[in-house]
Amino acid sequence: MDQLSTLWDTFFNWQSMRQALPDMLKTGLPNTLILSAISALIGTVLGMLLAMAGISRHRWLRWPARVYTDIFRGLPAVVTILLIGVGLSQIGMKVWGPNPYPLGILALSLIATAYIGEIFRSGIQSVDPGQVEGARALGFSHSAALVLVIIPQGIRRVLPAWVNQLIALIKDSSLVYFLGLAAGQRELFRIGQDAAANTGNESALLLAGIVYLVLTVPLTHFVNFVDHRLRQGRRTRTGPPDADETLLMAGETPLPATSEGAK
Image (cartoon, rainbow, N blue to C red; front, top):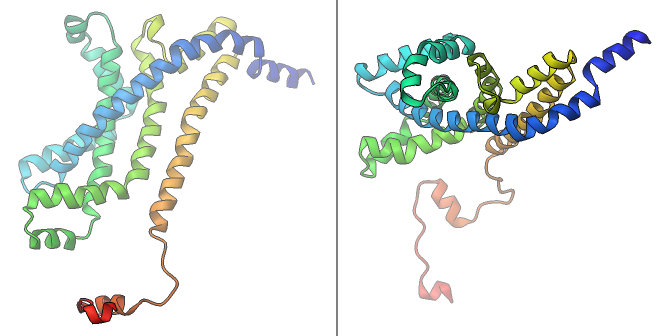
């Protein structure tokens, strides 16, 4: 019983949680959302450009895109964050002073670009090539067919994977603490870790994990809901087709209704 009581007090000390909760809601949660949202926005825009370069007909666009994707998907996120946050710190100090926050956003954005770009590229290339041929037959240029026909369909197909990457980005934002953020810049994990180190109790760190779950679990269920709707597609009609639908399925055009037929 003593061991169970000690274990319970280590992770479920309500006093420690109450002390850490105001800082998490006032400082940690906004910083986590800022890091994730800005990185997701930049990563989505650059990821689309990377996807377009990856499917380009020109090798001088395809090869750099492939190299970029391989590097930033192959490196651990913490290595990328440290390389950029520490390696570019001198440049950052000249631009915005001793503030590692923008460098953390830059590192997360570069990581997100590689993953989101690959997601978009796979979605675009999964669209039937006949869609391009049909659009060209209607008079669209290749670029117009790509932008107006292929890309919207590709994005629709990979929407669940894109949201999953946003969830991963929220969790990866905890790694920015390696850059030594100031007190007002700390995100959820850093606040929980500091409280745990000061009190010798892990309850505040567990509370940080609960807040992460509150952020990510609804997004996970949203992904499942969207994926189910996309797989389900349009509701099929159970009744037999009418005469006009039969002609259309046979490749014929139904005759317009005459005034006598309308009567």
